[in-house]
Length: 328
Image (cartoon, rainbow, N blue to C red; front, top):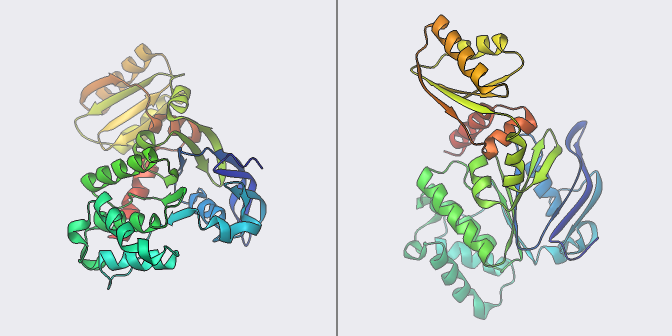
């Protein structure tokens, strides 16, 4: 395998018993890029990270990191990678400072460099003022930031982030995304799994879209959006929500894709815009639903995801809520 790549995966397959979690996937990650894995729960995102980082053995296929084969060189690889699991691996009873100091010891950072490295990370992540606070007393966003900082204490070349902003509020998620972007500017390669499509659009140089263990598409966010530009997207906003209306409208317009995006909004993919506009207005009138606005939409990564996978964004949204509730 080409050692100029940060990560190379060829034919990776993983079974858990009779369950196929990852299905013969192949991809490459360039040095210095943010590479995103997009997909709903069960798509194979976390399993892929666990296999690349040596936490799980593949059923078949080849994986290399920085030109080193994971199957035989995992101890050497671990010196050059940082892994941030979805659930923090830090200690509630230790302070922010002591957590990082312990990780520095664990990763073999020379004693003379540990304190300096820890303080630099605390400052970088805006946590220096809370350095003596116990981990359990920190906000959810601070805990996530400290967990990422701990994975950087040995100055890895590649950082694996598994759902980094799951369960965070809007401000904390925004702050963390900016930090991730800054890490890329420092030359760190970042492998990011997420089901937050807007996060991938903002952060990633390239993304892979997964569904049921298979990679359906790999490309830049813009190239994937171009897939959705092949058909018109019209968004209708109503005074009140009615999911039965969506179901009935789908039956009325079987050749088009009718997708609820919010409780009172739908998007219709495909068709001649004038025909779609007239059909929905007439049907709304029949059902007694008042249309508040109609807009032609420029495709987002979410629209590309819908086009490529056939899944509604409501599926992703429900899973976001599940994760938030589970972690809260």
